[in-house]
Length: 282
Image (cartoon, rainbow, N blue to C red; front, side, top):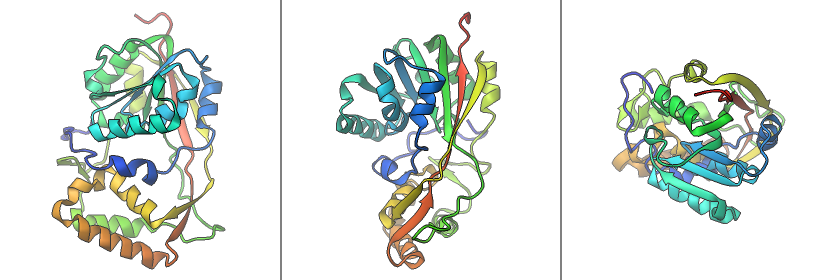
């Protein structure tokens, strides 16, 4: 958790309906890469910590007997439950509204725990130690994130690139130059150093997996608007009474950048660090 910043329940308030549509997908082949690295036998349990609308858990559901998602946002939990029903896996899915800091919350032992771009919002050392104790001996912890790489050009694709710099400038025009996060601000961004945290918690590893992206994506104006409202620093509640004006300006900006209302983008790669609870861990 960032120094000087405290989590509050408004962090992603109003973002859940936009998340699945707006966020770029993890790289194709993520589930296959994880299956090769573990490999799961279809009888284990998966814990998705900070699950949001169930993105990681639902992508990996076919590899496990049971998936359990934990998130403090009630709208995210409702969205995860809805999406599990759409995918026909609601019978093996359980969604728990709770902060990671409230674990173990009587949830039992797991074979795999996953953090999909969520660990930076947590009180990291105690959460890592608790999750380690929730894993069975030789259980795995997956730290999953978009691969940090040079800008992905849309050269050769049929539509203009998303004008991210102009969108960022518009958000700052409405919300100010310092990154917002819930009721607070994050002038230095979110913390890193996850490897040191997991090592301190007694995990062994990691094994690094890189799943290549680069697939051509087509994005509409509505998709890009959803991306903006899915982000913590531009979640709908932050605009208060100015949201209608902001969205109108955002749509005008996007239409100017692409009169057809279509954008091209290449999907990011995905990086997974696989940590293990040692078999002889206490």
